[in-house]
Image (tube, rainbow, N blue to C red; front, side, top):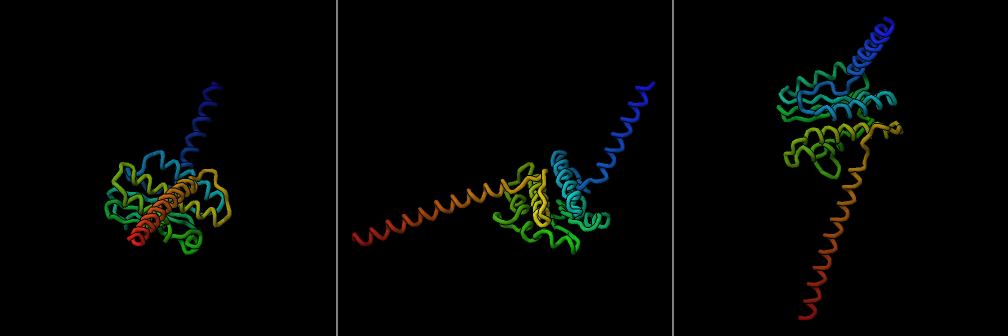
Amino acid sequence: MKFLIQSGFLAAFFFINSLLAQGNSHVVFNENVLNDKVVNELNLMGNELYEKTGVFVAAAISDKTDFNELLKFKDKLPSPFILLVLSKKSHQLDIIATKEALVFFDKEKVLSPYPWSGSILPLLSSNKAKDQFNAAVLNGYSDIVDQVASYFNVKLVHSIGNANRDTLNVLRIGIYGFICIMALLYIQKKMRRKKNV
């Protein structure tokens, strides 16, 4: 009997704990776009950031729901908040934030279409890979969380960080450097031919 009561309390504890964890979900809407692993990662980053800074970063991602319907989720979020909204049906992507929260990150940089600065659109505009939406949302959400953490001078345990971005920048510098050297060698070769003729 004692074992049954202890088991009941344990089951109730885990059930309530799981309900509370779902209540703190930072993925406020996911219409079969993001896989469970990405949703868990977003929730880990969002929970840690919220605990350390008080800024609530959420994501509302849909397949068939209209963009304007997703915007209604902003009314349910605690202030200050940042909401990443993506609607595949409407072909729209935006970041909605309170005025206070807009200071914490660079919205234009996150939404930039250029690969060297943007973290969402370059992945969405690339080849139509199977997990492009997972990668784009994870990358963009992580970028927002990292910028907010940097603003508050907070170190996050659950953060993707800038390792991928730094690696890409090193590769870009190497490739552009190689192209410049080849162009200079080509010009030098042309100049020598003119002198010899």
